[in-house]
Image 1 (cartoon, one colour):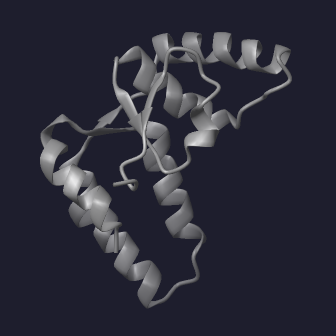
Image 2: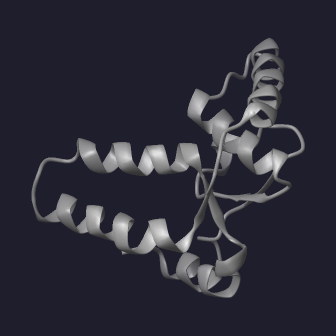
Image 3: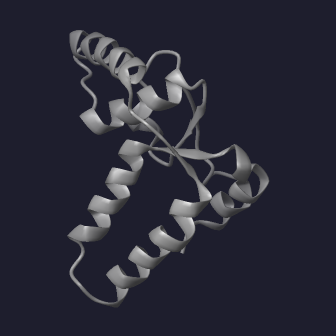
Length: 122
């Protein structure tokens, strides 16, 4: 079950929310890695019946790829490389002028010009 603080914020901001295509990839990948059984079946249903219809899915496009490439090179030059998929997610949020909501703030803190919020904190 999702965190109650996050659910509260989703209720407040739901129509303004979207997910980046790489987030959908991560959700699908994580679910499919689980062994077949009740837990996996429940998560698959939740993704299909709740998450997918509730959020628009924003593409990782040329503008996102360009920003991501520039930021990836900048961070590597500083000795602070970021996981590739985190860069994709950050890029989608940045090029759309959106706030990236995450519980893993440290994964995204190095990206320049990216607004980050952690909705699990009251």
